[in-house]
Length: 195
Ligand SMILES: [Zn+2]
Image (cartoon, rainbow, N blue to C red; front, side, top):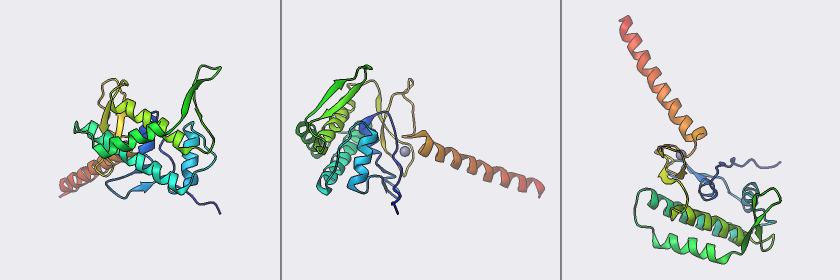
């Protein structure tokens, strides 16, 4: 029987889709790349297909992920960037050999130096993180308003007032919580009315 793994959170920013492979960091954390093969699956979904991944490569990926999370969080709250996070992000960026290529349809694709080179894929993710942390792209780093989440996300909304890392999960949960609180309040009011 094939094991069921938690779904991936899809987003349109590679670096924060990557940090979202660990969610609910401040609550009951959910690891969405629990095995090397699951990380291979994640890379394929994100246009960085590799043939295989070792346990050591998965560990390196998670180290990069937590470094991006730390640096992005510091950026969002306008703190100094942690030196150790900068080191890991830079090392990963430098170590890989990936090239951007243009498809006949005018789309960008990543060409890795070999199909087994997870390090190449990590360098693409690291470079993406650098571009958003350095403010090279139009948007703002922000933290999810859910207290159990607090994920760093890249807000590209026009007003720059997005509150949730993901509308379908954290945003929805908050809406439901507010709805239930209102129901309770109204329920109490109704009972008081009867008495
Ligand atoms: Zn969130």
